[in-house]
Amino acid sequence: MRSTSRLAVPPYVKVAVATTLVAVGGLVVTHIDTVPQTGRKRLMFLNPVMERELGEQTFKAVLAEHGGRILPRTHPKAKMVDYVGRRIALAAKQDDFKWEFVVIDSPEANAFCIPGGKVCVFTGIFKTLRNEDSLASVMGHEIAHAIARHSAEQMSISAALFPFLLLLPPETFHLARLAFNLGVNLPFSRKHELEADAIGLDLMAKACFDPRASPQMFEDWEKQHLGSSLTYFSTHPPNAERYTRLRERMKEPLAYYKQYCVDRQSHFRRHI
Image (cartoon, rainbow, N blue to C red; front, side):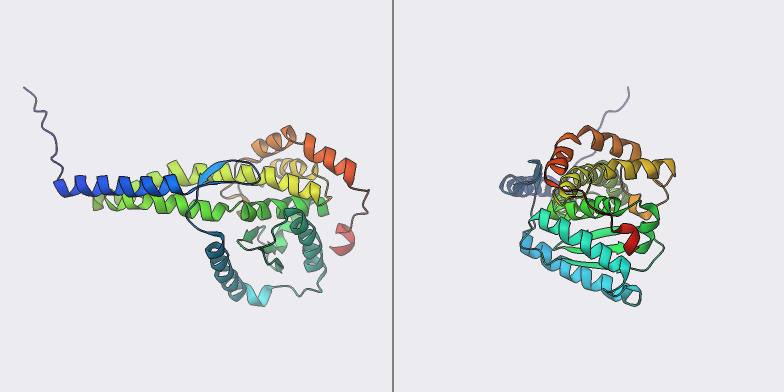
């Protein structure tokens, strides 16, 4: 007869698991937050003040790393980024942010917004854009990540689940971390990207940039097969999915743009 004996679990492991479940469960219940722009519920441990302090430290590190390649504020590209960024920042209505916009001279096609309103744009991204509306799409998306506090949310999820990883046997720890990244981090990254697309679309329309440029930009990148080669898209959903979703929710942002925004002469070519 085949043996059906089970591996015995030491009592201290059971106690540790039970204690961790109770502690984490209590924290989860008392730390549910809502994304103001979308109404989505999420876990949030990090308060805004601490998040902005971390953002300041991160921004200082970025400036130290790229100090010699940061364009002066009088440079045409820096002036354009500041012009677009200031308008989107006004639309974001984030009074607790201290907005700063820097342009890094690098062929890398990348951009990001550090918590607290520190926006960094790499010059390589300009080669992929049609006009200032396209730039507003990129910057609106990155600013959306910051005002929706996606970084703090990701840190909160990791903090909640990490204690369980520590309870695992050492030989399974690395496998568990891989499973955590595939099962938790990547899906949340995808959710955050799509949410930032939606929030960014509203921001650029309220800042009087044509929201139709956003799905057009992703379609351009899809045709140029840039989705997998740009650093900017290494953790992002496929371009085709993004421009399809953006077109599906275009009605309200476009109506706002047409009603409240006068015709604008494009500054993009003159400044770039």
